[in-house]
Image 1 (cartoon, rainbow, N blue to C red):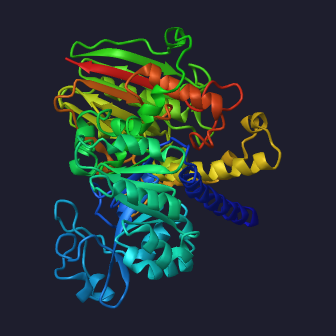
Image 2: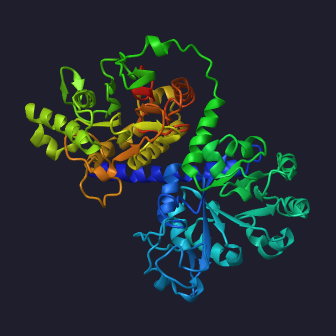
Image 3: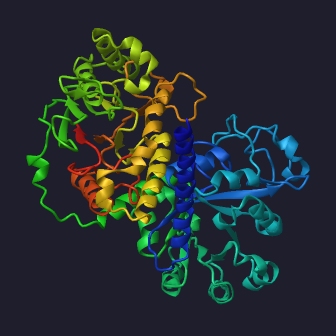
Length: 596
């Protein structure tokens, strides 16, 4: 019991260390004007999937991997600071009237509305609640907060969050220095400069000379303004350039809408032509995906690609309804132990990823993950061509359930979910013109990318990374940790226990996730993507840290991690690294199809 208690205690220490590292790394990049890595700022949080200026929107943005979340402040009748963009409650809540005429208690009885003006279950948060939700995980850019600077700073001191806040204003540099100079070495202040203003260069000079900021937010309405090119030269080596891509007049038309059509003409133009290193967007997931792809293009992919043929463990099956353009299957250790699988039939294409075994059970030398994968492939092979997603998922689950019955495993596995045969999958249906995503297999559908990473895995990966960093600081070598992974040992008891979360029928469980394990799946947790007119689809397992439009680019990104971060604790944090003798941290499967 004492050992278990100590392990739990150590886990939470590691989580704290790893979370703190996230904010520290962002600040390091911010304070280095020569760092060209682009930071992503989510405007009002992830409001497309939750509500603007909400705790849920902040948490969702953190899961996406954003660096900065922008929120707006307002003050209630009784002087409390809350997150709210408008002066009135009408647009974003179920209330009405001015914020300033309502007390915090009154506002807390209201519900937030989402972007479609639909009432949700979420409530208006206080600034204090937002600071605590973001603490150690992401930076907060506070808009409309300048007038409350003193009150804001008191909350930062109370919550220990002065390191994660960025304040901003277009107030003259001399005014900022005079009124708030006592805070400027404690809180990041970011000026705003309108490049369409005739005094823009004079204001910029004042900010650089008097305040020495780490970043400046710029805006310009049209491309006819040539000042942004000059700004790139002026700012070189001095501080970061921030642009907003929220709508066309913020960045000369190179906004989110432009980027959805051609990201190189939107985001890419601001980065490459105008020197932007911070972009604030209403589409953070899309921007993050673009930046990952952009980074990939800079990787050195010059290598012998013949292994994609000679080491491919999948024998291609053909379909008359779509064309397989690229495919690759490789086990991390051997073909006989590979737990990933690919299937192509006339009406279906799928990648199945068997979960790493958490028990000693095997049949004919095959462990639970490989058995689950093979059963799922067998079920797909017998699918009726027009089967629905729900019936297809149930059919796979039934196949595994029947295996339990046949081998007298059912009673034991009802009580011990960690011992079940478990798999994830992503399936394309020709007749339904849909992709079904179950668990953390990945897909690209046209320009849409879904990795579907489990939140609980992200937490465990952070804990493992922190523990292994401690081991390295204590003198262990990377080679030693490849043979004896203390981080994996730390989280392994939790990986065994987290099986209780899979297919858990309780909808209030925060970390619940769906898998194929022979038991009923909550269809609310399944992602069903309509294909529409898209002609290209990519399906893969999570053996690829990030999925790209081509196999070589996906492989190149993986190879860069294998070379530079074999423990998977820095460049790509994972619940497991590369074990000595293996070729990667996980089995991998990639399937790219072109629809006729």
